[in-house]
Image (cartoon, rainbow, N blue to C red):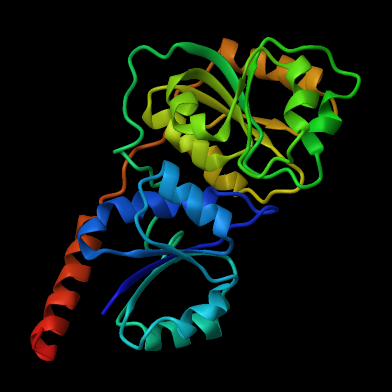
Length: 279
């Protein structure tokens, strides 16, 4: 019996689910889980930067049965399923958990992100790990240099760094993601996951709502995370960001989801399987 964790990923999707699933992975290490991603780059990044030991690429969720065995355990973070698919997945797996239903989207890896009393970076922009349409480059057109740093996304096109550099103070690579999020006092980001990570570190994020991304606005409002609507000019976006951080609100975010009941349930299921199998 094996434990699989599936995270939807890709160059036009980003690493939101991968980062969430890595936080789940860290709590399940004793079961030697396998992270499944849609592309090799996401898995390699998770291994190099997020503490993942085992990963495989499966392209899409529906390919999982080709490697899994009936009775295996699956945790998945994806919008690819239908109710019909989930019923069959539940029948195939001895335990099935869905991120967003059984595990909240707001989960953060506290082994990577923790309270930082002395952040040493004032302001940074994280536009997300993906920018297949070069939206950030478009934003810089007819814009001036900003008093803010830029954290590059994992899937940004090679060569874009030199084009973006004139508009920002300092450029941080995707390998500097954890350090930048942890140490940025005021984070402007299009990624809700990075908002949660920033908050856990005691920092103050502002969410920029990209037009090509889906957001649960009611959920965000409940957390009282300040937001900025997408604008086609970087000057205007940063100006609004400065206004938001000048009177930053009190957040309603409460960290962190207790995975221990799920860890216990998985452990009991595996122990029972071993006894019945004589392992």
